Image (cartoon, rainbow, N blue to C red; front, side, top):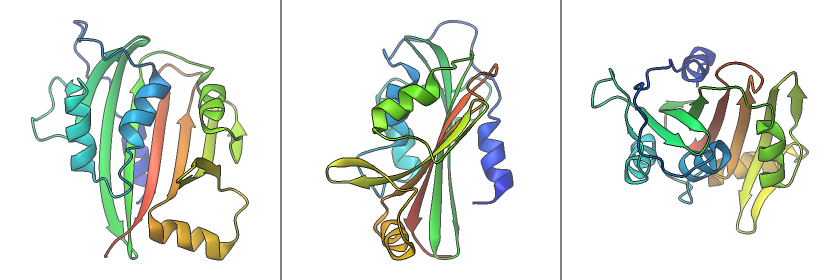
Length: 183
């Protein structure tokens, strides 16, 4: 995925309706895990959007019905969802981002507790977790060797999980899932 595409997803605009949406009862981390980290390792953007729709996410006001953006309200307020699949260099990079509409300095610590390991990068309200999905759950991927890293990507088990600007006005939770694919 090009950096501009990642930045574009991270900057999903605040297009939510002012009227409250039906709550799906999700806090941001629960919503992120449920929507952006589906159990199916081969889930596409279309699959993620269909699952989000089934979970109560709604098309973002002002966006075309075919757009890859959704909005939901949870126990902690409104959230926007954006997804994108980009192919290149024999891989598919699937990006899934949830933008919050309020600061949440606890996002990094909450995601760390959920995963069971510390981020590989953590500075100033922004963190990246290098995560491997295994049959037993999540494993820290920051210290793996090159063959294990290549194998995890080929198996569709490698994720970069990011918290961007948790102390800002619109923090973003993003998953970049690397899958085998064609160029």
